[in-house]
Amino acid sequence: MSQLPVPDRDTVHVWVGRGAGGRPGRAGRLLRRAGATLLGRAEAEIVVGRAPDGRPLVSAGGPGGRTVALPVSVSRADGVVLVAARRAGPVGIDVERRRELPALALARRWYAPGELAWLAARPAPERAVDFLRLWTAKEAVGKALGVGLRGGGLRRPVPVPDGDDLLRPLPGRADLRVGHPAVDRDLVVAVAVAGPSGAGGDVEVLVVDGDVGLVQRTGHGVAAERSASGERTSLPVVVRGS
Image (cartoon, rainbow, N blue to C red; front, side, top):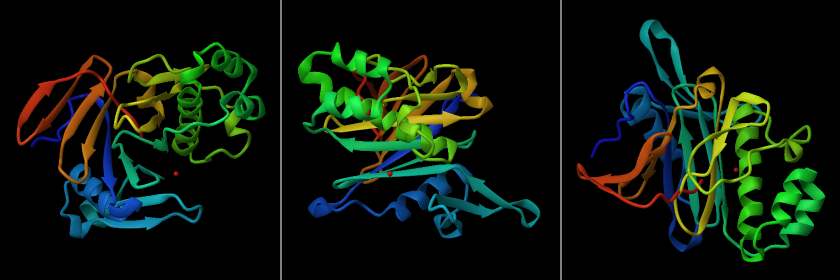
């Protein structure tokens, strides 16, 4: 099976791990796998740690004794853990389980007036999921920026979901992009990228099942596809990703 990105395309790799009995799979295992894949090292050579603010760190030894770091992000929901990694620069990921919730009441408290108006105009059965799409987008952007939701992060404007997997620029911020790749119909996932490379607009997301090695490729100009054991088949776009 190939996990190679399309050449010259900014690529976010997302590993999905599921745990038995409703417990998340271990993030450390997926972080080491991400480091081995993207840094070209054996998993035993990958160092996984935490920054003083709690953010995950992945690194390996490089030429001349230098340490090579890989930008990563981790998010958990009941029974699932997602790890995002991106060689081109900062990345953020967030996941929530689909569930019923008082979407409009929560949006009145946390979201900007324009986002509340958009949510109110959505069909009632879809409001809970749309609320979570906005929430995960804000979380993912905060992680890509390295600040989380501090400083009014829930009021930070994000593009409203548009029914596809594309990573779109934030209003007034061409250097920040966020989107909702399809991972599982029970999950709402957002992936965000930051930095000059994110301004190029050509961002691909590769979703890898950490248990069986299934790869799904989505992004700008990329037909959604899955591959396993070297085989690929086209399929309808479906994507998701603390």
